[in-house]
Image (cartoon, rainbow, N blue to C red; front, side, top):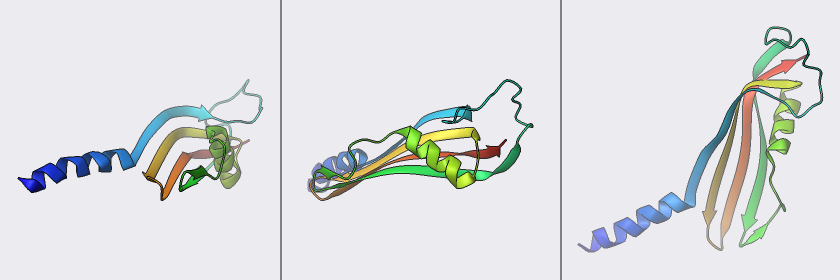
Length: 116
């Protein structure tokens, strides 16, 4: 009986400490100002799948960044793929935190790089 008493709080703490969720799926995604008048998915040079991150570390309870934005992770993915647009893009957020010790929050953008 004592193991059941400790098992439920341990499972609940595990659910709260580890977390991740999908923020959205997009057909076309970019942060650059480019003309999309005659845009088709076949008009650019498709590259490989690329990803970008914007990460915040939490030490004790001090944050290493004042804010996180998906714009920075999208720009990082565009820079890593040497692209202007990401197609079939996915935005995800992952967080992990052990109270008063260490934590991390990561915004990740993945997609297929397209260069015009």
